[in-house]
Length: 320
Image (cartoon, rainbow, N blue to C red; front, side, top):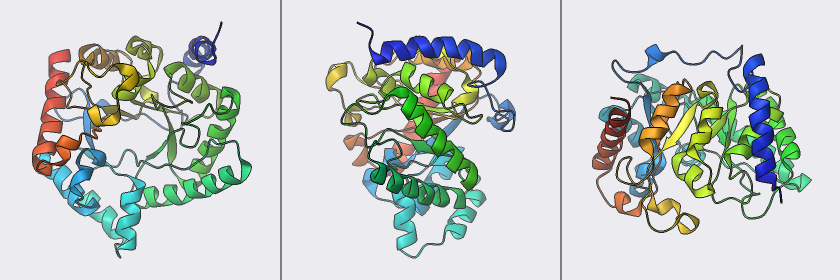
């Protein structure tokens, strides 16, 4: 029996070949990919801190920015809820943007959870309004992208992939209006968009020059995709890779976000992953995203330092 995911992978592979010849999942003509010169001297990739990694310490976005810059990250990836909390406490978004710019950090992505994908028309309309508000906050601090996960269709099978592609296109069109690009995110434990083939199909069929994908090492593993399939993608359409590792136990079907560990401390095939990224000309950010409760009990400075050092060490082992 041919499943939707199997059919999607076959369709995506065929479509990718066509897209590569013509332009599409490769790069948008009006959105040049970041140049290698943006990486630090001697570094093949750029490094980012996803604030989930230290979210248990409840520092707040201002302190998180200061910490990421102090440790040596080139970018920070905050969550919309942090920006909302900052704003509600009286914080000024222009002031926050200035802090970020003065620190030398970039904002390659903001994590949002708008219900853009759902079937219910009223809920989807509310979701698009939420997406507009989230995008506005992200743009105010200088973000270039915002995450578009399958929230609302993650606990049950969602729409057919062609319909999802139409809805992702609508989200991309909204992003054009707002000045930001939504990244289609794979969630491994989701009932929808848990496979590489599925997100590749949707991104291609959206037929938008800025369509792109947000992958996560843990989620690719959790969803059961083959990491080698990343060779079918273009690094120019992967602005951010959520970077982490996972242990051998519990088994894949039972593992959760809380089991994520520092890169190099688990069993993920990081050597192969980083080599693939170099092969497909990945020029985005490796953004360390962990939800480890043990790390949340430690000094945020210690965790941030370990996140960067262990990620760089894993890259060095893979690429020399």
